[in-house]
Image 1: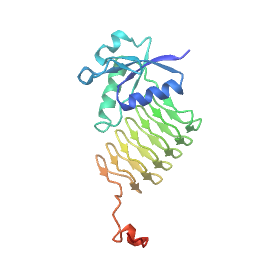
Image 2 (image 1 turned 180 degrees about the vertical axis):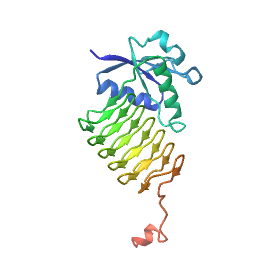
Image 3 (image 1 turned 45 degrees about the vertical axis):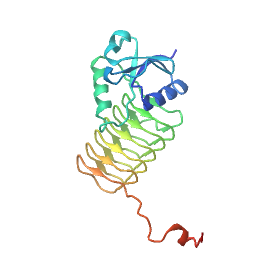
Image 4 (image 1 turned 90 degrees about the vertical axis):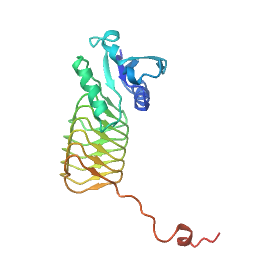
Length: 223
């Protein structure tokens, strides 16, 4: 039998998480929960949306598990706060690993982790709690992904790296071997990180700069 779970959130990630849990897991989503201040709808996918503040009364932790489906809002702080709240209520947080992800058999994965399709997780990787790995990432051998982290699509994290708490890794960012991404870092899309970072820093990606020759002139097109 599938285990009944509640998804915390009702935004885009919650909607996507419902699809993946329903189509590709042993979990059955029975409801969504949202804080009163952000409550906007009664139903999502024909499932009830309840107040988060009433969660423990309507869906007690002895009978239901949860998944906190919040993205990287406020550098993962919203997801972290709600995750810690449900843990204090004694809920178990489930993790999802896509059947189309490659995860080596000795990889360690914490709770409230969501791993999308086409991720490659190599041997001896450790992934902490409350992390999101969107589609198509590479996590090299013996790398440590700590807690409350959001990894966008198609990041390449080489071997023996460490990504510390509360970081955000932008699309197509690349990390050399033995690099440590310190706490609270934001790595921009397309950034190439060759050495360890400092804490609380933003590393912008390499933005495209237009060439001096325009496209029509380059291709010798006359209009």
